[in-house]
Amino acid sequence: MSEKHTETDVILIGAGIMSATLGSLFKELVPDWKVRVFEKLESAGEESSNVWNNAGTGHAALCELNYTHEKPDGSIDIQKAIKVNEQFQVSKQFWSHLVNSNLIRNPRDFIVPLPHMSLVRGKENVEFLKKRFQTMSDNPLFRDMEFTDDSKKLKQWMPLVMKNRPTDEAIAATKIDGGTDVNFGALTRKIFDHLEHNDVKVNYKHSVEDITRTSDGSWEVKVLDHANDKIEYHTANFVFIGGGGGSLHLLQKTGIPESKHIGGFPVSGQFMVCKNTEVAEQHLAKVYGKAEVGAPPMSVPHLDTRFIDGKRALLFGPFAGFSPKFLKQGSLMDLMTSVRSDNLITMLAAGVKNVSLTKYLIEQVVQSKEQRMEELRKFIPDAKSEDWDLVVAGQRVQVIKDTEAGGKGTLQFGTEVVTSEDGSIAALLGASPGASTAVSVMLEVLERCFPQHVKDWKPKIKKMIPSYGVLLSENPELLDEVNATTDRTLKLVEDQKLADTI
Image (cartoon, rainbow, N blue to C red; front, top):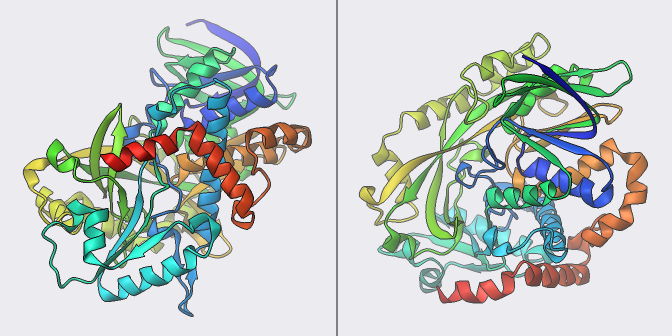
């Protein structure tokens, strides 16, 4: 087994949407830097970013009820919804830049306009949704939101959901037509095609085995070339670990202080997929419901139209599953080997705190198909078992860490960036809204790891992302300008007219 040694400026681990985004930012800001990517699978976007692995379908907080909550005084807190929407607006602007610059083409391949709706049942939930609508529609980001509890209007919005539904049921929905469906697997592949044509060396079938600090402060990455059964060593001044669920193990290998006292809890997802095209064609929206009382945020049920490889599909879920793997194509030993002396207490504390989550996961795992169909029938009263199949989605690893607010072993829901003090290495951990906020998250990586360069880069960043450093929610005129530009570039305006005729 021979060895190979190379030096480069930047190493990106994992060929998913995060590395694709960071790599493209580097190429725009510092085109002369040498960038190298390592991916253990055969192609880009095949693990967490894969379209079938529930890699963000355009999370913009337009319909996700778990991004808002009612405070003790009865008012509605929409701060998380505002943050997520602002982040998605940043993503759209960067994608528009890539399209306008002919760096990627045919945006319809990865983004399609789709109404986003929130649906609730029961008098109390209807009242909550109405208050939520009143609060959100006052914000420029959500001013196009509509609310109705009128059954005739609801039948127009979601005919399949309302078909043969009991007439005495209290039910309401909100709708925003400016939502989208995003295929992050397709987008990831497009960006990597662009990067490979611009001197970025992407190494597939290469898995990172170890990461160590060298005496001069750079990082040495030990890589196994599976195709040739060879060990390689590559050094770089900056390393980004964007390996989805696999990032935690690699972060631990770095030994940096920031990697201590962090654990991970894997959760797998499952979806029902409609195989009856006649049924699927009756629904054209992304519809989010409200999680059952006591259920975790990841369990919010939704009925989604998806556009996958040019074809329209209808999915319902998620149903949680459990596997100790940290990646869909990972190892059954992943969870066990992630437990170290420094995070053992953190992990044990999380176990004690999350007995209800464990119970929920067990209940989900042992559900029969008919039990899952009963959940689906809350959305589609006439759903027939023979029209639906179960599909296993991707693995997500929720971050566990010690926090001031939650104490030892607090389970985090969201995306988290971990960086070394000197900014020479960064890792992305966590899950939803993940992919949809990729550009904002990678800009955060640049700001934290390259503060000495960001001042010089800012004019270029502003040219690519006009709202950089500005809150669109506080600048309605810029919001209108950005929306008009991105919708035109990404062909969302033209396609919306087409979607309206379907």
